[in-house]
Structures are given as structure tokens and as C-alpha cells.
Length: 175
Figure (cartoon, rainbow, N blue to C red):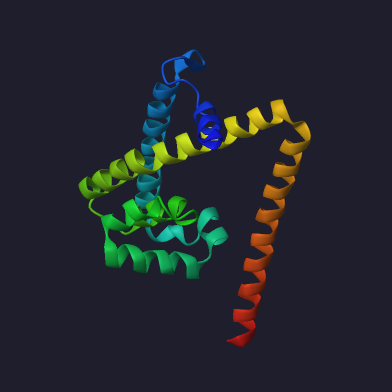
């Protein structure tokens, strides 16, 4: 019961001024619209680059193999892949470029990216805000506890990346 009470306090009041005098809910809506705009820019840059996507700075950084994997996903799922990419961290910022380069139907792209923004962004916005505000409340009550939580979170992220790198190295060694 006390967890729910402290969780409820971790999210700011929706109608109170939150950031730049805007209410919490309106900041979330503005962020959704901004994300939708970014996805449109991704698409059109990818469409403009076309085959040059491979040789662009972003394409070189991603690598031909990764772009080819994303192309197969887009080729198989089309605009539905655009919606799904919101839920996959690295795919979220690579797939829209490829969708543009592959000339996925723009009306379907708009629908898929709008649905993705309307479903993914609020979960991220409310969840991230709850985490940050919850951690700030913990820091106000117990700075040592907040430091321990922060160190544990950083250690978990580092451990995840070390584990993933080792797993990839093992797969590369086997093949």
C-alpha cells in the first residue's frame, strides 16, 4: 500500500505548471508532436538519400549488414514495421530512414508513425517522469539511498553491455 502511495506522488499533477509554465499533459502532447515531426524528417531524408544511404555518415556508422537487416524487415512488414520500430530501441532511429529509402507508401507511413507516437510516447513520458520524480523524492528523503540506486542502475547498464559484447564475441568466434 505504501508503494502505491509513494508511486502516486512520483508523477506531477497533470494540470499544474510543469515545464515552462505548461501543464504536464500538454508537455507530453508537445513531445509526441515533436517525435512525429522527427519521424517525418527521418523518412524524407531517407527518401532523398536513397541508395546513397549506405555511403552517408549514418550509413557507414550503422554498417551495410545492419541496414540490409532493416531493409528485410521493412520489405516484409512495410508500414507495420514502422509502428513496431517504436518498441525496439536501436530500430527506432534507423528504420524510418530505410523506409524512406525503400519508398514505403507515405500515407501508410504517416498512419504507422502517428500510431507509434500516440502509443509509445505517453508510456515513455509517464514512465520516465515517474522514474525521475521517484528518484528525486528518494534523494530528498535519503541522499545515500538515491546514490545507491543510481550506482546500481549504472552498474546494471554496464553489466548488460558487457554481457551483450561477450555474447556477440562468442557468436563471432563460433561462426
